[in-house]
Length: 409
Image (cartoon, rainbow, N blue to C red; front, side, top):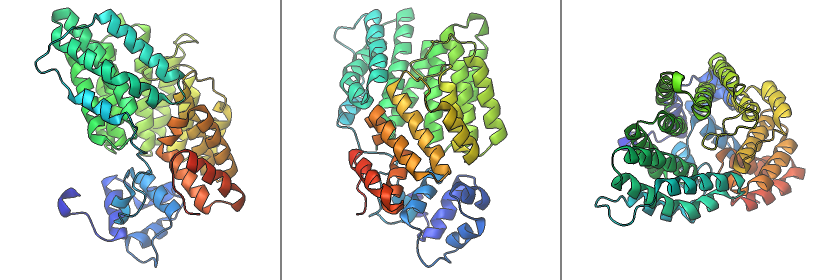
């Protein structure tokens, strides 16, 4: 890794990743509930033993390290804690993405038909408790047919096809996310941006920005996430005179993404300011509006507040927001499942492990595949199963078994 420059010792690795993330010892220690002096002792190799698994998982989460072996140097550590397993349909989706029609031939479908299929795919995703399985069955043919349309149509029809293709790539990114396929995720995120740019459609472009910003943030490149996000907002601002309801919602969605990124790097003032700007946009939307691509809506703002507070490690505020938003009527099952995981994270900050397990069980009942592929949920489950109170370990181990985790007896 990194051309052979990765430090060998655990403490040196912690220091390497901390500096790469731009964190001070005080910031990183605060995020894992330890003192700066404890972290200094870790980095200088003054502790007799490597921290136990729950602390390692918290360090990996704070430092955005998906492969725990990169942090520990021990290849026997659980390396898929944050990526989750590969879905059985992943290879078929990969083949479809890679099957570019360099010499296009065949019957191209009408754009109205492709639009209807894509709309149906979004509806199916939001309605399904196992949304990756649902998308895995739909995406291979949808990707191939839309790639063919973008290659064969010309002029205005081609631009419309490219806008559709950018959206298909965004939907594909939702399938690929949190799977062991980082190369494929970047391929679809970047192709989505290129297709959107060629389409000259501001809505398609703003959606592609939203997806690409998420890819940068999840990779730990917060500056790039913020920059591409701000560029997308400038595109939307230039279209104010022609703004429709979907483009307005994209303004709110991108505003929240700025809040999310700011929270991830500990900028509390910026995070809450951007969240408030997003909330003001949401208030301009119809009460029943729910954007399929980003989930932006009035109802999702309460869930977004929980995420901001949790990312800022504001224990009291996250608990307050979670209590307010626990029953948010989010119409999408996978998005509701993710919200419940964020509520569980709020309880985790308060060290309320019983509430954590109860909420994770509810998330599993709501959207099993969401929790199976969510690194935060996996980490909290392992932590309670292995080191939590004795009366909660059985429940946590049962949940771990349901989501495909192996824990120590």
